[in-house]
Image (cartoon, rainbow, N blue to C red; front, side):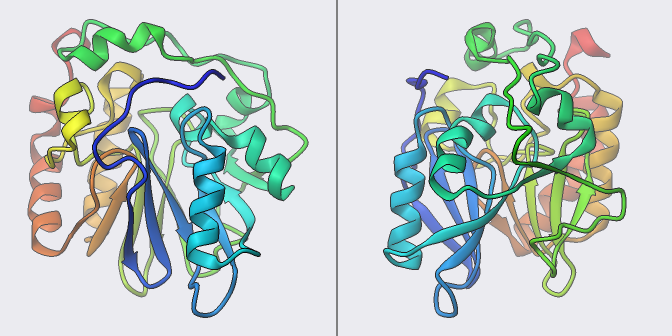
Length: 268
């Protein structure tokens, strides 16, 4: 995949959300390192960033975990280009298993491309979406499919929540002991369809990026499922992390008004 020119003012900025949860902005998307650098130089990587971002990810890992930093596993929330952009280079660097939901397998084994985007959605990014890559990749030699039990083998304290809608096999990750949530694109904390908001990272909770979302009924149910977990902190695939009362209030409002406000008119 060729490097994409889109970026935001937070690109390259890392935020320690919790002692063992680190969010890194890669142009317009977030990835996470799960692991406490005070205890280990190893971590689990959540998602694989934009095309051409492997060096940024590897260098940031070394800054956080030391020169011998190493991912032990990669977990994908889904397979869109901005979440798997550096996956081949990262696999080459670390030679590790990649976990994903079984319903994402066709898009990660070279068998199926994602459906065309919906450029009729309001917003300049949506108008640009036909230019975004949507072809499948093939990481079958390293792919491990998650079972239906919610267990993420490399993350014993976390469980995955199947949150379809944006893609069929989209997952989010939840840790019960502190109610931490890694959302993927089940919801966002920036209006991802607006180029200005993407570039400035204006914080505002919305549903999944509308131009690539294929099943709005499922997307609505997924947001309600996540709201019912009552997370205390959430890292979404797009936008700044959100926590505490602001997260609780905004997520409840999103769940209550999703069908009215988030579903594009031409999809109702």
